[in-house]
Amino acid sequence: MVPAAADVQAIQLALFEQEGRPRPSPTLTTPDALTADSTLDQARWWYRLELETRGHPPNTVSAYTNDLAVLHAQVGTKPLRSITAKDIGAYLEGAKQRSTRKRRLTSVREFFSFVVKTKHVLARDPTEAFYPERINLKTPVPLFTTERAELLAAAEADGPRSFVLVYLLLELGFNRTEVLNLRRQHIDLSVPDAPVIYISYDDPRWRHKERRLLADARLSAALEKLELGDDERIFAVLPQAINAMLHRLVRAAGLKRSVTPQSLRDTFGVEQARMGKDEDALLGVLGLATDPRNRDSVRRYIRLANPPQEVLSGSN
Image 1 (cartoon, rainbow, N blue to C red):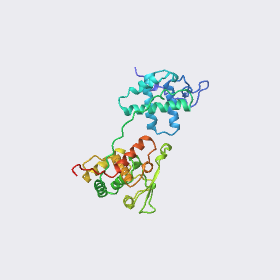
Image 2 (image 1 turned 180 degrees about the vertical axis):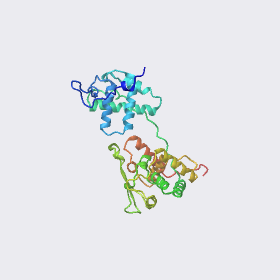
Image 3 (image 1 turned 30 degrees about the horizontal axis):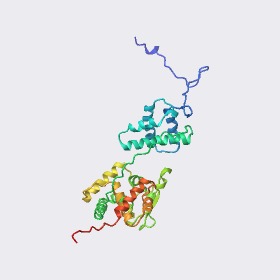
Image 4 (image 1 turned 90 degrees about the vertical axis):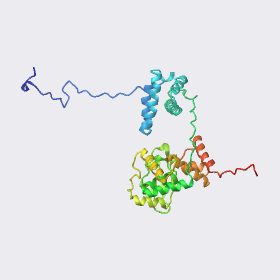
């Protein structure tokens, strides 16, 4: 039987502690201190805290810790001191693609570097015997001189923002991330015929990519038409929109090949090599670290920039 309204008493939660009955409060807990006997799951908590404290982007933190979760699922509650090279080998072999294995090795190697070198919890690194598999570089396919002119003309006809996009990629060697991060305040237009672009990175790990590039009057004229505010991004879009925009301009130019932001950057690299830049200068103008893989990349630009070799005919 449903009670009558008069029989129902409202229950009012106490705003203050009642005498002798303290109000409960949530308990905040953290994992035990990191030791050689900690499980990988416990250590992963401390590693995430370390990455976040060092200012790594959220996607990097997630990528590293998610890879460690895969290793944790494999080794279970085994303490850190008992994780062996055999465990690492099985963890890497579980990935079918070379790129995935390379990423997993990077994640677990960085983790054990934290455990061994930063926390001094372990004396040995079970990943030290493993080396990343070499992933072959894609062969650059630069645009020909006529194709470059046609693409720039199509972009200019489409509008100032389209022209700026192609100009940044093709004439200054920007990568897509740098295009998306560029703001009006990063461009010094004090001398309209020779504007200077400052490429900077907030993350200290990428400071080697920072550089200043000298542009020309074409960029100044296009930016003037856009009438941007100082803090306004020139391309306030998602990364995929840059590719779609470029694809549309390639069709408008009548080009019959696949063109991506990277292929325009490759074209820039080859043109810079053709004009005399050596290996170190190319690394600098492209904002690349001086590692072996990047050196291989710029050496390809230099080879492609070499004059064509004369072919001798045997009929002479």
